[in-house]
Image 1 (cartoon, rainbow, N blue to C red):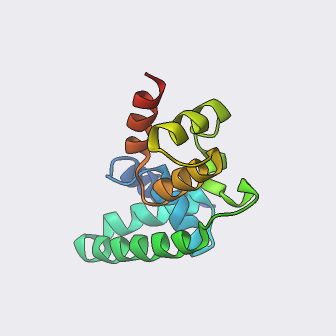
Image 2: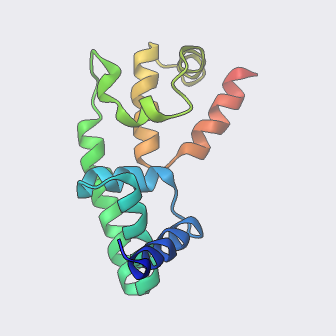
Length: 136
């Protein structure tokens, strides 16, 4: 990678970091685009730098990526299919159990699915709040 290419990528990543988008948006888009998380962050940043028209396209990509991810986030006997859940800070069994009870879910497996879906939708802040209430 040349210095100018690296400089452009650094600007893209900085635009991502300074934006409204977060890790979970990049993670869902990375899966959708078939890229690494870092490549997705740079692509998001590039679209931001290109302007409002490209941000509108990015927003539609994010909707499409979330819809596709939600279609695959179905009840499963093995939570290993819940990729975002496994990467999250909400994966500790005690937390899953507390959230299941807080939400009135029949089992921790149901809570894992709910966590996965919330992460897909970019609701990690809502999950953090729910967990605070569940622990109190």
